[in-house]
Length: 146
Image: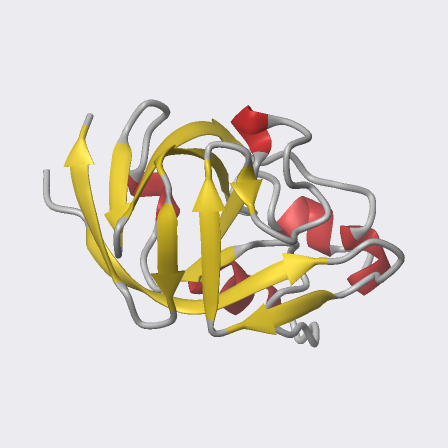
C-alpha cells in the first residue's frame, strides 16, 4: 500500500487557552507532544492528526473555520480514511502508530452546530509515538508498517 503526504501545519494546546497555537516543529516522545496540555495524559490519544479534507468539507457548507480549530496537533494533506488502526507512519525522525478514530467533541458545535454531523467520521485520527523526535512543517509522511 502506498500512502504518503506532507505536514501542512503543526499545533499545540496550552492550559487556560481555548485555541491551538501554531508551531514550526513539534518535539514528540512516548507521552505525546512536549508542552501540549495533553502531554502525558493518555498515550493512546496523545497525538491528534487531521486532514485538510475535513476543513474542505466544512468550508463547502459555507462554515468559516481556520486550521487548528478541529483540535489537531498535526494537519496533513492526504485522506486519513486510508489509515487503519495499527498502521505506522514515519514523519521526519518520528514513528507514529495509529490508535483510534477521533470522536466528535462538544467544542466543535461552538464553531457551528452543523460541524459535528459533517465530520462524524472525518474529524481525524489519534496516534501514539513509537519512536520520538522532532517533526517539522513540510516533513514528508511515509507509511512504514501495517
